[in-house]
Image 1: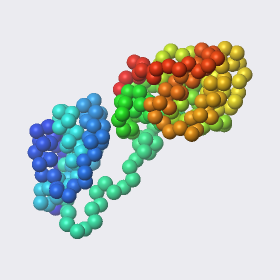
Image 2: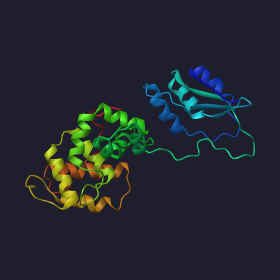
Image 3: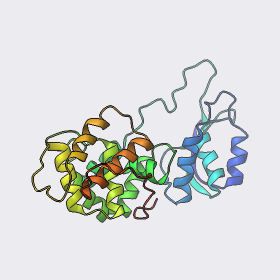
Image 4: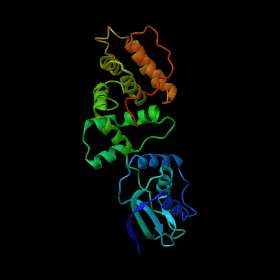
Length: 266
């Protein structure tokens, strides 16, 4: 018979539980462990019905990533632990076979209807990965939402510059990598007017009121970025194009990759 308990698991307890890991458990994903550990260390791991599972032979059959994260974060975490899960060799294993919830799914379930969260989640997610947590995987949905919570005024200001979602109400799509560069430029201190004009030209070929800027940089970037995948080098090109537009450069300023600006912490 299955039995579930809420238990606060210390790092030492986690190590002991991992020693009971079933031999055929899936390969450990170290990026997942790192993401979970970040959330745990920040105190953001909430108690839910999901936690750890042990079968009727005492083997750990669900939760190895959570336990490894507790060890890595070196903090105690409270979670649901279920014992006596029926598991027979040769039968289909049905734990964690569903579709992972997206950030939009999480916001819907949480009742978050604010357009700032909806429109900015993909940009903020990419910004966190490329400018703050370089060379890491995409942050979890809860991390993105928490991030916007902490920096709401700034993210709302950037959302008003970028407009409605990635495609806007009309015009060319504003690629995610370009949105990341706009966030970077905002925190680098470029004027909001320059950034608004850049988006206006990029999306709609609208060069009105661009006497102070060079619209060619926005148009050239739009054509160039379509055929290039997101990468640190692509981001560098986007950041340089925005700088050159905003400062009315005749030629695009070839610059070193702009460092992270301490405006939006992790």
